[in-house]
Image 1 (tube, rainbow, N blue to C red):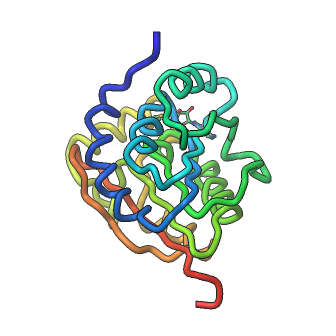
Image 2: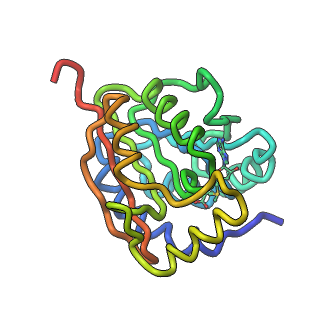
Amino acid sequence: MLTLSEACERNKGPILEVLRTEFAASRSVLEVGSGTGQHAVHFAAHLPHLTWQPSDLGEQLAPLAERIRLEGTSNLRAPIALDTRDEPWRVASVDAVFSANTLHIVAWSTVREFFRGVGDCLTAPGVLCVYGPFRFRGQYTSDSNAEFDRWLRARDPDSGIRDFEALEALARARGLVFSADHALPANNRTLVWRRPPAGA
Ligand SMILES: C[S@@+](CC[C@H](N)C(=O)[O-])C[C@H]1O[C@@H](n2cnc3c(N)ncnc32)[C@H](O)[C@@H]1O
């Protein structure tokens, strides 16, 4: 039986409305850390102008591949193994990258590797959308996020809700320009960075 994330079922609608705008001019999306594949299936079905490439750690691929085989549309590719710590990422160039609920799960060194990999595979122009909980100017956006962060760090001290400003520094170092912060339900956000067209 396929694993179902209740959170994905709740958040896929609001995220889709952001991606409709942010990925309107995009053609090829790499999703990092696709998890159950519910996002990939939903977004590919509702954004048929995109080719959607899901990915996850090799050991997570079997159930992800099964959902995509059973529920995927023709613009949704079979998932590939991608560990953001891989150097280099063995992926095709894309003009969009999406990742949900990954940056607070992995170690900070892996967050740095995420932006290095995105910087290498994203074309110009290109767009990066990252969904999840974040802190701004050292502040949580809700008490529940503060509680979630304590839980994350107790479980794995290297994980934790990330500061927007620290992510922004990593993105800027890779030639990305911050372009939007979409507030979404449950105190989550979609942060958007863009790589300007070449020569711009
Ligand atoms: C909390 S889950 C989020 C899954 C899905 N994106 C969602 O929103 O439900 C985090 C995902 O990141 C993946 N992941 C963890 N470490 C990773 C790494 N180093 N590289 C790529 N993916 C990783 C996990 O396997 C898992 O699928």
